[in-house]
Image (cartoon, rainbow, N blue to C red; front, side, top):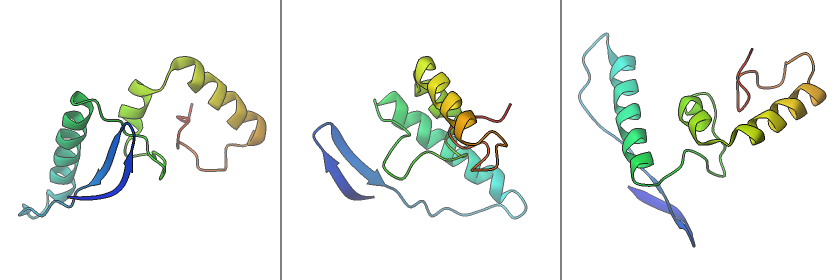
Amino acid sequence: CRVTHAYPDGAAPYFTVVAPARRGSELEQWDAIKTAMTDAMLEQGGTVTHHHAVGRDFMPWYLQQRPPLFGEALAAAKHSLDPAGVMNPGVLVPET
């Protein structure tokens, strides 16, 4: 673990996981590890948001943490600025 940022409300730790892989199921293993680590982080009061943004990988957890009204405002702004939906589709605002 390395801590690159410390804030009044907590630190931003980064983890590197090295584990043996089962050939042919690497993606499933990665997803299981990421899910377990993210769930544990959230159970301890952490968040998936950070200054590097959220992205597609954290979208399921982000949607749980994001206030509904903020999501609506973000979707409206995205639609207004990008009516064709070509800028980062599915990032922060789920595709409909």
